Amino acid sequence: MKGTWTMPLLLGALSLGGLAAGIFGDGIWDWLCWLGLGIPVAVVTRHVWRQWRVARPS
Image (cartoon, rainbow, N blue to C red; front, side, top):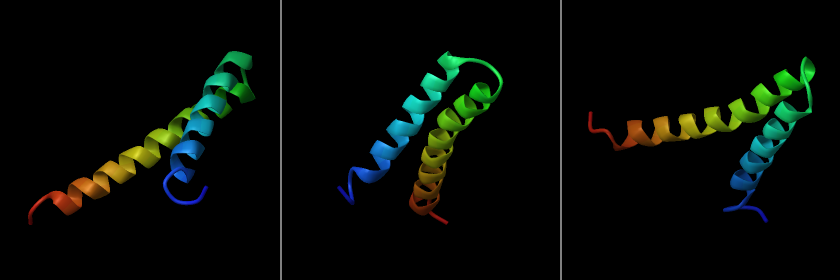
């Protein structure tokens, strides 16, 4: 399970949890929704940013 599938499964689980939290209710559920959907976006953005910086010539 380690290696290739660990991070995609984790990000997918966070996204699914965030979507489910958005359906359940208000208050704390809204915060869980933002976290569940925001963390995967931040991780992917960081990864793309690092790849872009490496590929860009100085």
